[in-house]
Image (cartoon, rainbow, N blue to C red):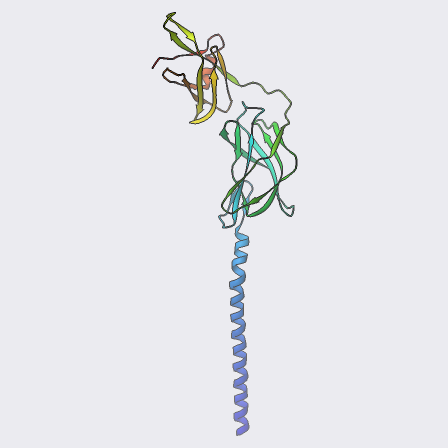
Length: 262
C-alpha cells in the first residue's frame, strides 16, 4: 500500500513539473513576441513610392531638397530635374528620378521635398531639363554626401554647368514705355521708372525702365501677369496683361503708361 501511494505522488510530481515547464515556455514565447514584433513592424512600415515620392509617416523620416539658380536661361521657367541618390552602402534608391521644380523667384528653383529615412545619403547625379526635355544643366564635380535628420528638410546645392548648346528661341516680349507730363514744355516725355512684374501674386521680374521703349521678356509658362510702375513723386500705376496682348504691343506701338503727379 505504501508503494502505491509513493508511486502516485511521483506521478503527480512529474505532471506538475511538466505543467510548469510548459507554462514557462509559453511565457518566454509571449515575451519574445513582445520584443520582436515592434521592431519588425517598424522596419516594414517605412515605404517610399517612387512615382509619388510619398512616405508613410514615421518618427525617423526626414526630407532632402535640391536647390539651384537658373543663371544661363532666365527666360525659361518651366523646369524639371532628374536626380540619383544612394545610401552610404552604395544601394541605389533613386536612379535619374524625375521631379518638378518650384520657382522660388529671383532665378532660384527648388525641388519638392524628397522623403528619406534618417541617416547618411549621397547625391550622385543631378540634371536640369526644360519643358521639351532639353538638358540645360548637369551636376559638376564630386557626389554630395549629406545627413537626413528626423523631421527636417535638408537643402543641398550642387554645382551645375550649362550643357545645352542649341539656340533657344527667345520668348515673346511686351514692349513697354512710361511717360510723365512736363509742365515747362507742356508735353508728355519718356521717363525712367521702376517696374515689378507678378504672376499669380508671385514676383518673377523687377527692373529699372529706361526713358525709351523697353522690351520685357514673357516666359511661355505665364498666361497673365500684373505690372506695377513706380516713380518718385508720382502715383503708382498697375496694369494687367494676358498673353493675347503681346500681339498688340510692338516696338513701334508699345504699351504706354502715363504717370500722374501725387
